[in-house]
Structure formats: C-alpha cells, structure tokens
Image 1: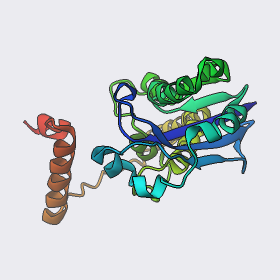
Image 2: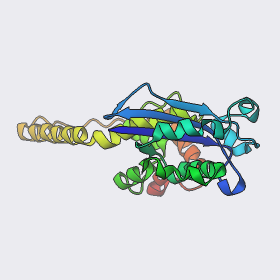
Image 3: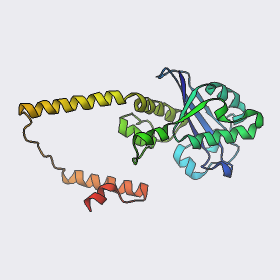
Image 4: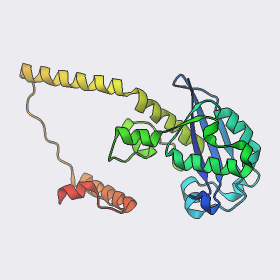
Length: 234
C-alpha cells in the first residue's frame, strides 16, 4: 500500500485573492513505513507574500525569486502522487490550492483528485476526538509525537510530523487499549490484596501556580476565549 503525506505553504489564505503555493513537501509511506523517497520543492509564486503568511512559515519572496514556478514542477508532482492515497491535514485547504495551480495550467491537467485519492487527517482526528483541539500541534501533544524542531511551519517538516501522527492515530489504538486493560487489572489486584494505601496529595507551589496562570493567560490570548480551567474555577 502506497500512501503520500502532503503539506503545502502558501502566500496567503484565499485562492480567490490570487494566492499561490510556495512550498510542497511530501513523504512516502509504503505498507505504513516511511521511506526516503520524499518530494520537496520551493516554488516562485510570482506575487507578494502576505505578512500574516510570512509570520507562519518565514519564507520570503526574495528567497523564492530563483525557485522554479509551479508549471516547472507540476508534472513531477502529479506523477509522484499518482495512484496513491494522499493524506493531508485539513485537506480542503491544500487541495483547493493545488487545484487552483492545476487550473492555471489548463483544462488538460484536470483536478488533483484525478491522480490520487485523498484522506483528510483532520476529519479523522475530529471523529476520534470530537469537541477537542485537533491541530497538528495539539495532536502531537496528545500522542507524544516530537515536534520540537518546528519553530516555524515548513511543508516537508510538517509532512514528516503528520506521517508520525497519522500512524499513531490509525495504528496505536490497540496498544492503548491493551495498556488500559493492564492498568485496570493492576488496580483490581491492588484493591483485592488490600495494598492500595493512602494517596499522597502533592500541592502546587506558589511558583508553579504562577506559571500555570501565565499559561492560561497565553491560551486565552491565542484563542480569544476564556479558558475552560477558569470556567471550572468560577
């Protein structure tokens, strides 16, 4: 089974405003194992990059000035993903941009979905964790996937991280279930043997409480909403 994990970076958020792809990163999985057959290109967008987009990925127009245009890498790209299952986090966004680029090349190029099937890992995560945050960073935290090298977004790095997250989401549930069974068995054994004992209460220090409240302030500033922890305290 061949799967390709894909991520893109763009000049902005809306194709309707003429925004373009500036980076494509792809990671290949064969039988759920990552290979060294990556596909990665920076792309000259032939337009300016929005300040908000630059803050996310840190890729400048000057850096991209001598990079190939999408038309120059399009054939290699569609051949790379051809007949594979492509995995993208928030697929409508990336697929929309890819189709925008293909449309600019002419009708004969068709749509991205003509070359491959697409699985949206964000939709998959929302099914498994309804009502929770399911961004790539949130999933890394939830599944203990190392994303410490991700100071800024980058298409190839994000594709590599997403491949790790996807494999855990789709293949780690059995191990998690077995772990929970083992925990429950040990708990039953402790109750029946009378070895449970008293639970030790460890209270947070003043410094730890201060750091906790600072973190809640950051979360509220980022989300624009009151943190759930403070709602519970109220």
